[in-house]
Length: 127
Image (cartoon, rainbow, N blue to C red; front, side, top):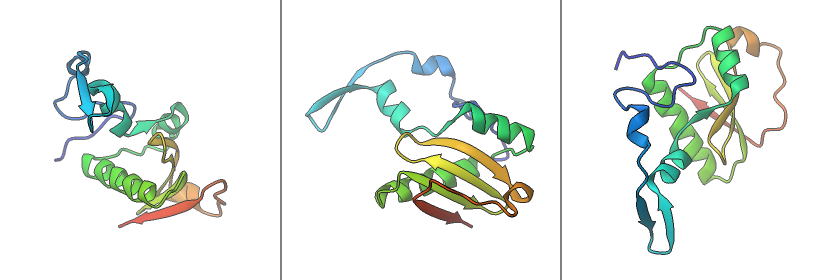
């Protein structure tokens, strides 16, 4: 897993964007019809345009294992009822909207110094 993920790309690895163009009806729990694409979109980690700019400006590249840890942190925050979370990972901080699984902004260690994080209701620390 030494493959790097390009920020802004929702298709890491060998999954091709065209592979998700087909929509098929899938029944969830027998009570609601949703397409596979809708279900997948609800589970994907998204990056806002602002977050993508910050990651590029600060030279932050996220590896697949880091993305997995971020997704797990979001799942944990959602399980506790969080809405806006600060995710701290080594020398990086991310502000995430938990409901829509979107990274709102990102900063590296030097940008975090003397910074106050507001409008968050939880913090998740990843080792």
